[in-house]
Length: 578
Image (cartoon, rainbow, N blue to C red; front, side, top):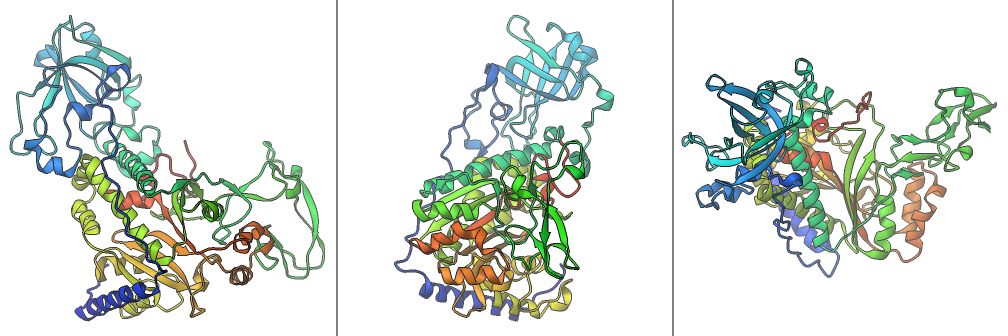
């Protein structure tokens, strides 16, 4: 967005930030939380060998794991596999004969990094003729000797300190096996040339063989590991919350129904029905909604047929979860700090680059914590994940820097090296109003901030992550704690450059009377939340939590601009292939 932010706006923004930090110190629950040391980002020792005694290509190439190793390549340990007999397995990126057919070059990749290992097979090796008939997309096992390449690219070495290759020259110790040939090379979707992201989504079963998707998947794995390390080291307990639920955490209603009432034949008449009498112009409600919420409209006083969910598998209407939060609060109210990490589902008819119908969520819930503790943990978590990736998967970040987003590493370091700004929702509106005419959606107090507003705040005003808190109560879910002004709730969103919102959280309402009032205001069926309300009846306590969309975290760390490329098999409106 090409809007020039003047110095006065930046000055006001900094004043808001300073004032809010002072206010937060005064309002924090007492005694204050002692700052918790971050866990080490090097807690795992990864085995270099795998099945068949094979060594992973990333280890054979001596790829630098961390940024520190990359910046000090000359001080890295010498490649211990040079002049050693090793086994390697993988898929060919290219097979070509050289020297008039006297030897054959194979570029092999096993998914451990985006770099290929060059293999040189001499013509005297058994089954050499079969190798010459192979091409891209074949699966091999090679046993050979790793040597330094005769040609070392000293001017531009890239990631590697020295180039190596695997040679097969001696039949007595060297060999190869073709595990699987490419039986139809003419129809193989992934040729050597680069393919567009949209095309790769059409061949999702093969796209992990692309350097792009395999790098994304390794970062996805690293962020999963860092998530568990972060929360486990802080004493959180991991909880598996149900995927099938009968209540709507967000109250938005965009949920997938789970039912066994639909026959395989698709016969509508086979669905059990029951008569439901409705008053004029009222609606047939979903079980977790009040009578005034959406359903099937009746325009006269007649008996109307509706689905009889009492005959369904769970004897009531059930849905795929949109969040594990409500269940998690049960555990938090007896076990303290807990978190869940699992799939969630939203039936949104969205085709944007930021939304999926099936995605993963990290949701911590902290006992005796207020909104300000929530902010601190959210900031620490994001920073830890970034640091973990830079310390353990720098070679993949290097790939994204070179091929996806120039300046990615500097952007990630910017997140690490500065405190997140903290402003209220009202502050945000005040800062945005001056530029309202430049946005697609005009700015006014009470509106839900759009992605364009969120990115403008983080990218152009503060130029770093921003935590916006104290949102109007009408914008947020029923369970968020009402502030003293009776107009806003203790909710927060973490906004980051390039992405917008990555975290949404709040302090939970721990007052039963206020919770009931909000459930009624949101037109939800209070009876469906009887168990949730009892948590406030039997020993209520202050607690807070947040949710982070895992795929958006991946976008943040990799620079990938479409969320459909952050998950192996994306599910979105109109698409559920593979």
